[in-house]
Length: 317
Image: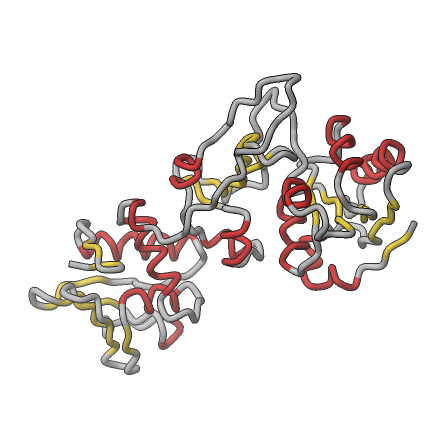
């Protein structure tokens, strides 16, 4: 019986490996061409490491008892979690393998991501009653890791700090969105199969990550204003404070930008027609209360495409 973090995986060992092979195929990794039982305690498969994973006869043994793995041809040896991590390209001593097994075969109760204390005690405006759009219990359901997160450049630190998760029911990455006072607004979703974000209808869009600035008003002097969540998170990855409009801007968001406790805004909207118009509206509606500059972003790119190059972007007034 396979185990992860001491917890038994009740699924048959072969079914676990079939699922692993299917996920590899979805990630463009063509390995594990054959499986066969070897006695009562071992499973043999084609080695995923030598010959580019394309050997003809199975030489890679996986113990059904303790999950230990060993290739009798190339000599690779390690645990099941280490093997899974390395197959997906992670040199992390099995950390990703543990997350993959937990996500697919173990109850959510064994997830080790620490619950994040949501600042829900702050006072809100008396003009309307704000009903929480999600709870800590709902966020806990999504605390999984999906390979797409790393494909988009997210780091474990960002995933934890912004409580990014994965919703298996909709095959989408989840992004909790909060209002400026820290109260829950809604959970944005981004499909791992398409390019579309999903936001609930008829809900006022907050400014993503703005609550971080209001929570520590003395900490930041500037903020980059982005369109998408991923653009915003790319900036934070390089220690550049940023917010996202979840689009190109709306009137209620301009009020938040005016009150944002920073002296300077750097516009980082996409260099297309919609982005140019959005930037102009921000200048018109916010320019009297902030110093505003704008990144020069090459046509056809956005901040997320530029990756580490975001640090070298020039600013213009």
